[in-house]
Amino acid sequence: MHHGHEPPPAPLLDPTALNLLIDELVEHGYSVRPDFLPAHLIRHLNDELRALESHQRLTAAGIGRGREHDLRPDIRGDAIRWLDRDSRAQRAYLEAMNALKDELNRALYLGLFEYEAHFAHYPVGSFYRKHLDSFRGRGNRLISSVLYLNADWPADAGGEIVLYDPEDDSREIRRVTPEAGTFVCFLSERIPHEVLPTKQARASVTGWFRRNASQGNLVDPSR
Image (tube, rainbow, N blue to C red; front, side):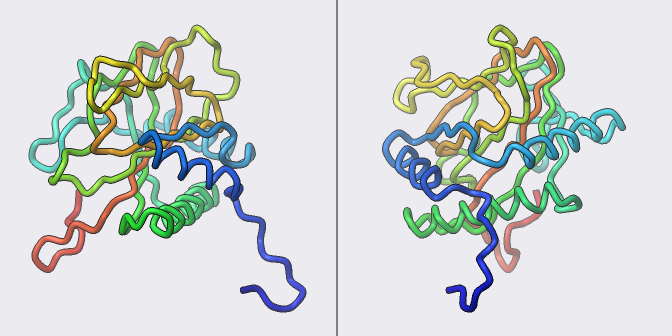
């Protein structure tokens, strides 16, 4: 509760949009929310990703984790950098995702423990073939999220994310244009998805809400 006359700071997340997201996630296993975060935050994140890309501070993304990590440009072609809170925009975004995590836990009792995210830059011609973000019983990633940063994305530029039916992964259930401000989230272990080849550079922040996967005395061993 807030006491006195000071108004609480304006939340980055609109409560109505938040409730719609949770309802859609429960009903369909995914949610697509346009204009989910303030436009100025999207612009700052996009500027930051552009600067990282122009200074060659992104790393080619691979597939698999730990020892099985492998660079496979025939499967995925994006370059990434993990968010580390070293800018105001990163901190604001991670705080918004922390608020979303708390709401998801409150509404769905998921026991989400943390959120991790990276910038993703897809150069012209790159893609990410159909995959699941987590495998049942093995992964601690429960909900995947993508925030798009691309202003004025042309209709014919490709780069859409395609979500597939969990029961029949040849059946497309949703296709989303990577337009600035659109936020997509889905169940990591259930929804196969792919990124179609992009005809222009494509920017996003990709993240995962995770359960705590403690092994021995280690809380969440390093990725």
